[in-house]
Image (cartoon, rainbow, N blue to C red):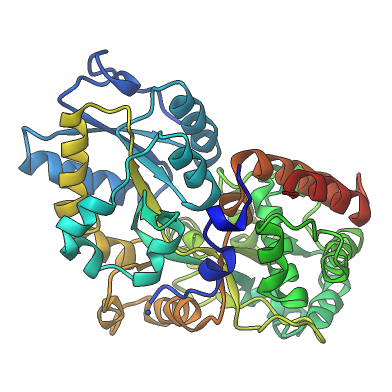
Length: 441
């Protein structure tokens, strides 16, 4: 991946933009990519309710109204999808519609000519862009060209906490890192894990480093790394790496966290079944906690807040990380008929009113549709939706998840070393050395 400043957009430009300003494939012939016939578009969606149902319903509604422009879906768990889509694209067997998170992975697809430039289409269909959050387009843009249309919801990271557990030990949610660390022995003494963590998934561990890097070094720290400067051994970076190992050594995470998976929602279950007091995760977990956690959400037992500040750090405590949106591209290997179906769906079937409202009422998430906050009033989840909307739109820096911002090769090296860091198999300095080599120009 080319890290030249002249040939790439700035990570910081993305970071400081706030969003407002596995199943077996069903065969449908074998004449096109992903086993589809040339007159049917294919779409791989992520599994897990309630959002899988929302995505599927949008496609079903489209198919019911467009018998001559049908879309065939297959669903995959998050981690399985990430591995399968890269292999499929490389083999020329990608689905027509490629779902992703933008950033470095999208850049690699665009540079290899594996996805179509959507810029001319958007110029011919300005109404598509006009209704979506302006800043959501940044992570779908490569060298000033849009290769992925933003869709679905804005997803900042949130520190969730179990109010019942805090009441049990007579504690208050932490407002600083020092307060967070002081809670660890308090909860452990009560037989409660301070934090749930799905460490086997690795990207869940990454969220801790993202926010510690930001709170200590400011968004500029990772931007310099994104630009190809080997700054993983910056004092602020080493401080963040050390702090997370301090938390591991203090038994801050659930025992056996390295064997817990996010795809199974086991980390969420640990929070709502009173096994853990807190969990750092994305807003995408709210809907499943509400549907699977009994009265945990509806009964007012779930608390949430932005990640606490680090005293003396450079980062604004209002900053956040996560996904400014999700993204869909069109495979360059698809037939023209398949491409036409995908673009028609993007214009008139994707994130329309019914789907947008379902993300609000069923998943408890904020769609990236302008003026959507007007629909929050009077809803059961009004407070949560307003919190998410305000966090995303008021953050001075809303930065993209590292494993999406970096190239696929760099991201895999990052996740491997994060796993070792949390497993106390390497020191912060060894982590920095490995990552400096992986991300240098």
